[in-house]
Image (cartoon, rainbow, N blue to C red; front, top):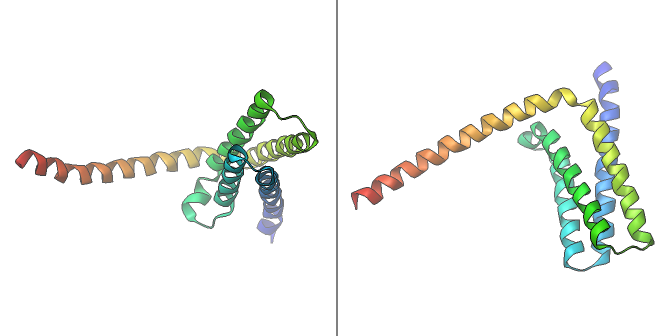
Length: 146
């Protein structure tokens, strides 16, 4: 029972992060234009990565949150540089600032997961490199024999 009580705020917080991400994606989608559509697709993809029930994604969730924060900051900076400055844009930026605050709170609450996440990523990287080297070795032998 105690673990359910501790997990409830995290569940609500992640729900709020996903909701703010989807709101931002929807607003960008409704604006039309290639840049806004790509921005909406990026937000939608990151929201899917946050809620996907795949084990590897759950273990890498802190990195996804860092990525979402970076994407959101890049969107805000891009808007500051290029505009357009109208009412809906200000509402969207307010949602994005709230999103950044929610992400910061979630990362603070789960800060003990960040180092194990990075270790897991490093181990995963090593495994992928070994598989790639094994696959390239027979190909190199075939080309040297020919």
